[in-house]
Amino acid sequence: MLTEIFKGFIIGICASAPIGPIGILVVQKTLSSGRKAGFATGMGACIVDTLFAIVALFALSIAQEMIDNHREVILIAGGLIVALLGWTMSKSNPIKRLRSKSSKLVSFKDFGQALIMGLTNPGAIIVIFGLFAFFGIGSSPDYNAWTTVAIILSVFAGATTWWFSVTAILNHFRKKFRLRTILWINRITGIIVIVIGIALFCEGIYKLIFHLLNV
Image 1 (cartoon, rainbow, N blue to C red):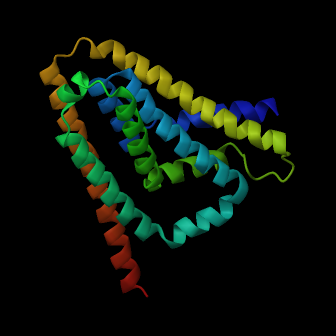
Image 2 (cartoon, helix red, strand yellow; image 1 turned 45 degrees about the vertical axis):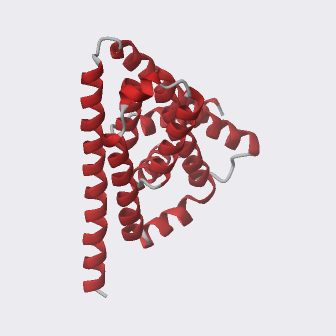
């Protein structure tokens, strides 16, 4: 059981480490609004990874088949949502947010944005499923309830540890940036997320056209 818990913890870290839309969002939130906003964003990603871990444990083959059958729709819808969130990021004013006193509302909004982006990002789903398959978790029928819960919690703990560490480091360097620099970082990261969203959308359109031509 300890081995499975350790594997789950590593999966949580590995699922969070790639610099995708969520990673860029966490960087942007931490630098523009502080560690609290960045960590709230990371926790949104943790919840998504945990949900995907639950799916991987209980219905990996079913979920994988569903993703394969609807990959084009997932890419198109996910790409549009990611691009829209990137547009919102690029247009937001970090200076105004730094002066805002409604930190609880801001953190909840950051959490929600990460949750939506993670749930609509097909890459996040594929990474979790791939990691579970690589570590051989989810294929054994011998897991009892305690082992299953322990694996899920260890994935959550691994992801939380990663985002806690990342936001702490970013917040340390944030103090060395000027407000204008943070504003430009905000815009650039937003544009990068828009490009990722457009790329996902175009990939979905390409696969849809290719599928229709071969029907």
